Image 1: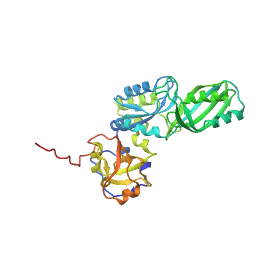
Image 2: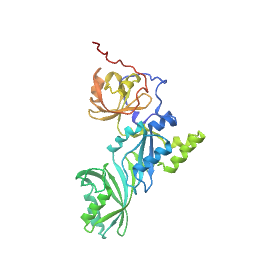
Image 3: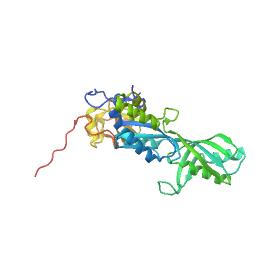
Image 4: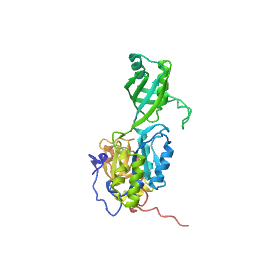
Length: 332
């Protein structure tokens, strides 16, 4: 199956991939997924995000796991985990919105008209100062609230759905709403329902499911359960533009070389200078994140020059063979 982001690309040139190197992104075995995999975890209430990551390391017996977006101990919901080298890809998820379902208590009972009016005031760009117990510098900053919807109200208890920019403090949002209403408001319970394209409407993975599936694979060599829980990390990049390159250009990129036009095979339609892109092999494996230095038309009209500036290498060195020459060392 071809990745969503690799469909309908503009063809610049054609080449054949060597099946002796690399792995088709959707054909990875468990060992490979434990280094290039993604788990969309349903964080339980109680532990910190850091503790959840530590537990998952022990369950999966791997040294490196990262998460995208810290959740407070009592907050539940979508917590994307990157395994091994996949931790390098999680920053992309900070570019998109996050959705929360938040239960709060108003300290007075406003009219429906007044409550609606106040909620409307918090749509768009707002100012927030992080709470005292936060991991970031406490200075006023702006965040965007794309949507805020009153789902249900029972006297002074209200349930809100909030679609917002990453880094928005929902507890502080409730506090500020209460300040405008007058007597105040307090958040009671919070669940993150989506992170960018990953939603709780899809299947979220519980800690128990992960432990059971890994034990089944580790002890019984049955990978059927675990393969359903770990996604290829390439799914993270479905919302950004794409570039497909030759096998011969891959190892040079992994060593830090910039991507020049002769190495490019396909690019996203309507690519613009400055766009963030994911660089892929012909097998659909993500190699790196990069910034476009040329537009689609400029790339099509050129035969040489650097087209992309590498921002983050994800693929390990020597996954593909070296096809480039080092500069000779001058001898005295």
